[in-house]
Image 1 (tube, rainbow, N blue to C red):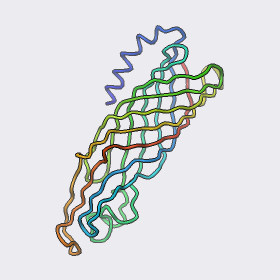
Image 2 (image 1 turned 180 degrees about the vertical axis):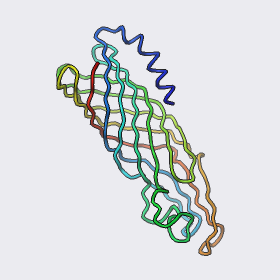
Image 3 (image 1 turned 135 degrees about the vertical axis):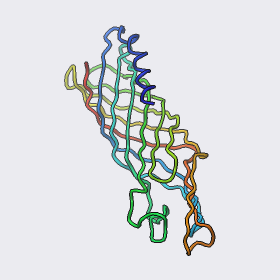
Length: 224
């Protein structure tokens, strides 16, 4: 996926570089992301199905922008979130008698990374400019659980504001909604032995039909 994004930039750059007033913009970002979940089918003690959410946590990333006219930019977006699944019920086998060492909370870890290409449109001129943005690409899901890593198509929409400090530097504040077309057929079942189970003990982990997240970010835009 990283190679595809770099190829997209390489293809677009020569055409856009000839545009009047074109400029490259590099924006490292930090932020906070909300939302996301997975599905757990517990067939050990409770014999219930659970939708388990992801913890809200910090995220970091980078934006590569290239002007495409007076008000528009082509953007490549990478945004990474190291987070965990919420669990205060021992749903993942991390309790005495389960298949994870008690207290090993790292079993809940998951990394969610977006690799997108999109457009940004400034809504006004001046040193304080609002903007709207949209993008599409892929979401990379890497859990610690015995659930396969997956890469799925995704899209985003957002908006924000840029505050110019100078011709070469600006602050960027943004809110963005991400939607990922996750596949519920991507799943894994872990079976283990426990005397407390009424039958074979098993946990089945699966991705939902789709996943939504919202992210707020702050970045410094360096222009070249």
